[in-house]
Amino acid sequence: MGKATHYPDTGHRAPIALAGLVVVLLAAGCGRDDIRPAPPQAGVVGQREWPQVTPADPAAANSVLMRAISLVGTPYRYGGNTPDGGFDCSGLVNYVYNDMLDLKLPRTSRDLAAYQGPKIEPRKLATADLVFFGSGGNVTHVGIYVGEGRFVHAPSTGGTVRLDHLDGSYWRRNYSGAKRILR
Image (tube, rainbow, N blue to C red; front, top):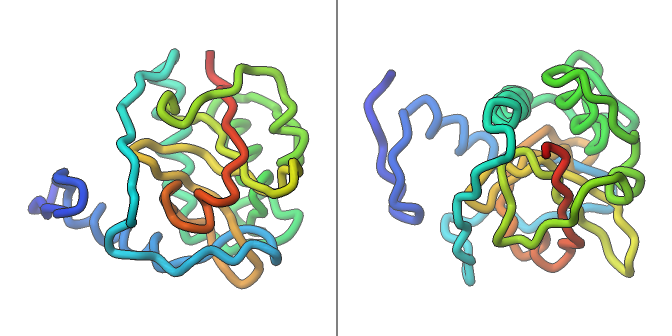
């Protein structure tokens, strides 16, 4: 592995290759046409503490995490559900869970939000939980939680699969809940 880099906002160390990936991810875009996240910030104002919660099946959660992160940079495409063709938000979730765990999930973000499984409080999120966004009680977007308040998702036309922080102003304002798929 490469030399470690220190991130002053998190106090963690990561290999330089990972540091470069995170910078690229934060600069990218993802989701539906109506999703307009705020530009990435060096430090997120009002950032919450994100306790590390051990998933019920750490091996399965890790495989979901690694596959989701490996797809960062894949182009957004409405209705897309493959790395070659691009992804929309629920297409990404479906692809990752099917590819890594042979688990078939509902296709839309709304149906995923209604899918079986307990709702999760933000402070109890574990790797591989699904996080949902919308307004007025309507779920319009979904991502995969990766830890430390971050999630991978496919946000908007012209963008790519990327990593964002739940404490970003857009995401915090439109957060509508989370579900645990792995039990």
